[in-house]
Length: 106
Image (cartoon, rainbow, N blue to C red):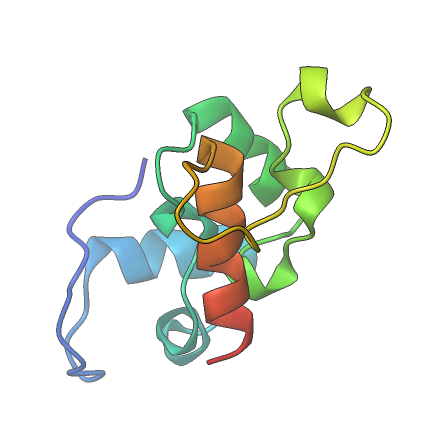
């Protein structure tokens, strides 16, 4: 668990989060602050985050839809994350995928 994360854009300030994540990932604090991280993903269990990090998927832009589908959805035929139906309620994995798409298109 990496503590003391700075929210502002002052790249000259150090934080425990930057030091911890740089040490863990080998990325610079500039790289870590340049894109949304998987730890920012809406309502994601810690074990899922840890699994993504172990696969070196640190940024939302590194993710694929299959990374977010619950195990029971992965085994269903034609199971896909779909956010194309306005007005309908969406599942947690669909909400997460929308967040990923937004990050990828930024």
